[in-house]
Amino acid sequence: MKRIIFISIGVLALLALTITKLFSNAKEAKKKIYIHDMQAAVLVETSHPQMHTFESAFSYLGSFEAMHQNNICSEGSGKLTELLVKDGDHVSRGQVIAKLDNELILLQIETAKLNIAQLKNDNSRFSNLRKEQAVSSMEAEKMELALKTAEVQLKQLQKQLKSTLVLAPFSGVVTKKIADLGSMVMPGSPIIELTDISQLKLSISVPERDITKITRGQNVNVYVDALSTSIPGSIYSISVQADALHNFKVQVIVKNQSNQILAGMYGTASIDNNQKQSALSVPRKAIIGSTKNPQVFVVRNGKAHLSAFSPGIADGNYLEVVSGLTAKDEIVIKGQVNLEDKMNIKRNK
Image (cartoon, rainbow, N blue to C red; front, side):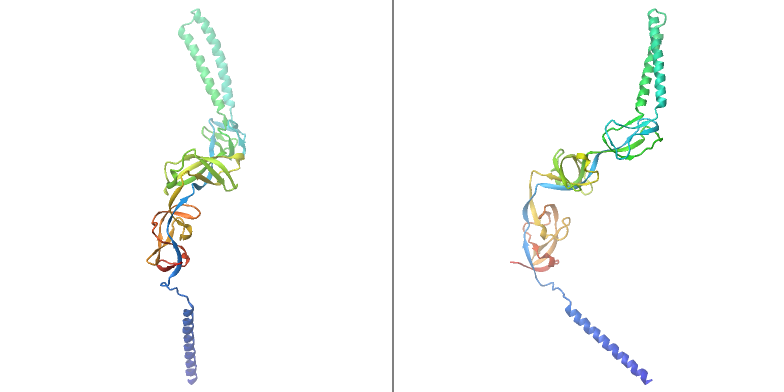
């Protein structure tokens, strides 16, 4: 019994020593933790928003689109007997790309020609008989009308024969084969997809504040990212309706020498503005966060207040202030990495 009591006392003593040691270690660790004094002043450098003249060129990123891309369809009906192109082939405007079965139409044309020949002979005889008053004028006129009707029918058949040839409406590259040999096609049935990239449209989004600086036909310099080269272009179209973000779709047309640029590649359009713009601005080094939602530290009564403002145009060093700051505001341009909202500051003299 005494042995159990001694063991229990030993265990309790060991537990007490362990707890005491843990409390001692916690106090030592707490002493080593740095707690920033919010009342201590942080050394910073300040300035004021100033007027800055921005460069006269604006750049917009976009992607290239084919000038023409259409499904080429059949005008006639029948079985597809010949497909004269394949994927990747270059075709010229007016080139035959497919043929439909035309055997029945050819027979009908031959029959129509024989019928016309017979009607011409009959019409010639009726004309002579009419002079001799052997037939009435009405019968002669019916014969003339029958001949003209047969000639119209022949023209219709010849047009049907022409529609058995599927022609390329513009020059381009076959990018997709849609119908196969032996398929029965109807008027409007697609045969191939044809894409013209001899000219390309670069589609860009221009914000509302810049759209009035752009005019149709205006010269543009286009940089092709994939080829690391620049080519000339011009404004092709300007949308009259903005999207939900108040951006307008603008298309820039460029000539594609040797078809080096492919549809879907990225390009950057640089548009010159003849009127340079001066505006109240802050240096980029003062900005906290992104240029879309910028903030700066504004000094009031010896404290740094984190303040947001509405941005405008930007260049490499400055960002325009549309609203939210004035030229009288004192802003932190150096040392803000150590700042938090409403902390005390002291100016670097």
